[in-house]
Image 1 (cartoon, helix red, strand yellow):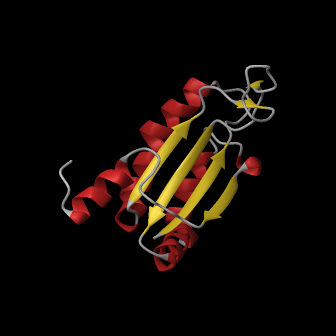
Image 2 (image 1 turned 45 degrees about the vertical axis):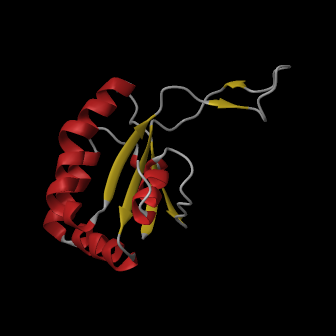
Length: 141
């Protein structure tokens, strides 16, 4: 599998709620329409709080902090070829312009970061990997 994550920030002048509403009701729908067939997962993780400052301890040091991004978007694709196909779709002058025009409504395009990831699922974490591992080896869930 091949994974990329996007760090996204709302454009100046709109609220986090407006950013989320537009992303879910416009941009995500465009993604499903034009590139959804190339993705295994497409998740949007909206910031609710950010904490930082080190390891949490009873003595403090780990607490609320500012973070400029509003959303971490995850794309999981079968392979890098699927990601390259998505980029080819975005390079199409008509489809690319549709996405660009929509982004102008809610994104600070200059702040976008793309992170290519080495995806590891060892069955720990949110439980999904553990459940799939159990199913694979025939254990009851």
